[in-house]
Image (cartoon, rainbow, N blue to C red):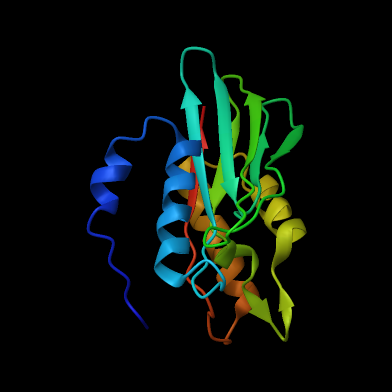
Amino acid sequence: HERMEFPEAVEILAKKTDLSSLLKEVNTQLVAAQGHDQIKYGMTMIGVEIDPKSLTLNCWSAGGPFIYVIHKDGTEDVIGQLSSPLGTPILTIGHEQCKLQAGDRILIYTDGLIETEKAGQQFGYRRLLKALKSGEKLSAAEATKYLINQVDNYRSEGLQQDDYTCVLIDV
């Protein structure tokens, strides 16, 4: 793996006050590092902000996967807008907002989770939502373990091609 260092990036990023500006700055650094006429480095990223007073979730996406919100009444929202990954000369950042209620559950995850494969077929969004809803009566910690077990059992003996992370938040 090639390593890229951005000595001034940490200082610049620390001054950004909103997630949209942060994503734009990361993109500027990546594009400058690879040259404006090629896409050598790319990454997906989402930024999530939850306002505990207004119970509002804001999601900014640069090619990242959708976020699931399972409301306490059993309905679900898929949060996210089409966007481009970081490292592209013309960046499109998606932004979406969702009103939350006490008792809602939020799943934030990386693309490695849904792209886990078995015999060439990905775990995907449908299986992810089904697993999430199957564990809705469990605590967030237990539901996270259940979800990871579902993904690992799906993959079975195959190699995991990409790392994954998931965060489950109970409102």
